[in-house]
Length: 84
Image (cartoon, rainbow, N blue to C red; front, side, top):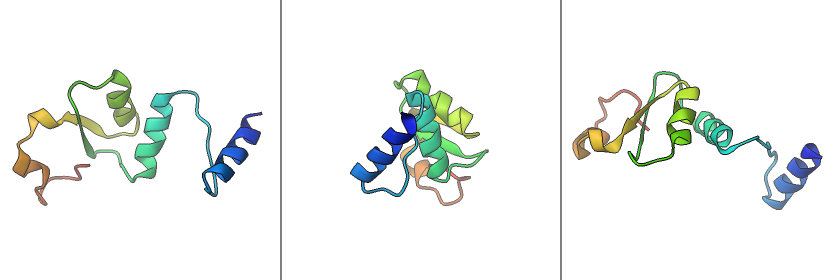
């Protein structure tokens, strides 16, 4: 049943593949990994987010950080370690 859904949804989206997941946290984690987030990276998010956002970042091996803890020039700093 799940495999059939994945095939049909991939076709609907005109995508080569589709992966069904059990919850939003898993979807966020897989999206972060697919986007190239690596262990040790810092992912900047909003401070008033649901816990699943920071949990997914942590599960991907990255470190969640609030945009409020950074100044605007720091976000664009080329010297900063992989900030997404």
